[in-house]
Image (cartoon, rainbow, N blue to C red):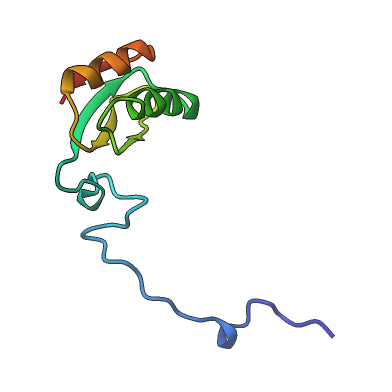
Length: 106
């Protein structure tokens, strides 16, 4: 005797997220919850993979005053670098450049 693993009475209906805002992982809008007071955003070009992200995060994290550095990767396009802590924009630009990438805006 076989049983149907997809029996409808055993399914649980889950509520869907509002389509207006989307979810955090799929939304095309930047998440403002990730950027707190004192955070500085930079747009970086040339990153194509996780190794690129690690190189930039490591270079920027080594700067004095940087509490954290996080990259939101857009392979082949402009990626977003968020730096927390009292930072010097010129020093961040130099660190990104020394890692082999370009800051296009901040």
